[in-house]
Image (cartoon, rainbow, N blue to C red):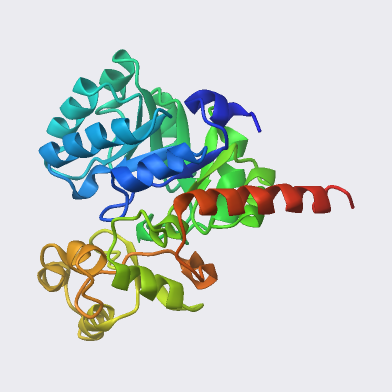
Length: 313
């Protein structure tokens, strides 16, 4: 299928594999791109030299377009951007920061820029900054999230009404039916995260992948809004956070409890008790671990079947 998103990125399907910390390295990004989606390397967990290695390996593994996701809240952002420009990456997704900071430079270098937002306010700001598209992410999504708790079903039509540039929906999307629903609401494409965590090529730990597959409805929660809101699977670390809230812990106490490298410990190293296990609500609908290519194929098959069924009423 061809639309604004497939033409913007020169891809087969309007599906973006989200650039997730500790899950989306070159193997996943190249596999998603080879399957017709847009694969993203998640640079948030990478030192600059590690990102360079992943870009070089991704170039060797695919001749299809791919990009890099850059969370703007990390200290090495400038060095990451330098590597991206030097390596000739054609697509950059930015998040968790001000799009005005890097969009002009990236656009000057001929790079397609997309910014992830959680509200209409930030979508309009990103459009004003000159980005080529926005990802509007509902609070169902895993990982770091917006404070407003706007759901994807509410957020997409609100953004679509006011924003003219291409719109990508994210949060709670893992199937062809959810992709169709998002596009009926006004999205031009979808960004899929949690479903790709449970893929063979994801760099997340096998124990974490298995935990995602085992997740049931209600097993995730948005928490730590005083710091940076994050959706987690409920485990011992999450229960420790709840105990801290019960004792009216202030932000400094919560920071101390969070410590450093909790996400790496949980998602990459597989510590299911003390680690931070970031995943979306849609994990309750993920029942197996499979190749990224099969995930893309399943989504598109269900999308086309659902479209035929619904619009034949």
